[in-house]
Image (cartoon, rainbow, N blue to C red; front, side, top):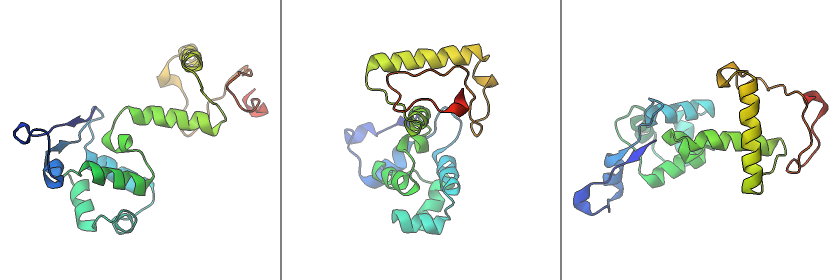
Length: 166
């Protein structure tokens, strides 16, 4: 998880530049904020100049972020995430990015989770399938769709399961 540190001498209130200097953005994935920013920019097919146009952040500063020389303020992080159409969590390397991706796939496939009970049922079903398939390591790469056997209708799926999943 990323760690936000604020200087005790300021009582927790820092200016934008102080926040930039004191915001620690490395996470458990071993990558620094700058690496994740570069990956997100390249993944979006953007040059630093194009990201500058979209975000309003000067190219020289983007380069300094990517090279790990400075860290962005919280407001700048939000601008970068918006411009790249990614979550702030993904730029921070936060585990919430994994959950966001999971729920994006569910939503795109018509699955609605409206109650905690439905969320628990779905989580248990997914865990059972992963265990039956031999663990997460045995699953197909993210690009290949997982082929499921015996998909049945559930109350939180908008549309009936398509024939290609049966």
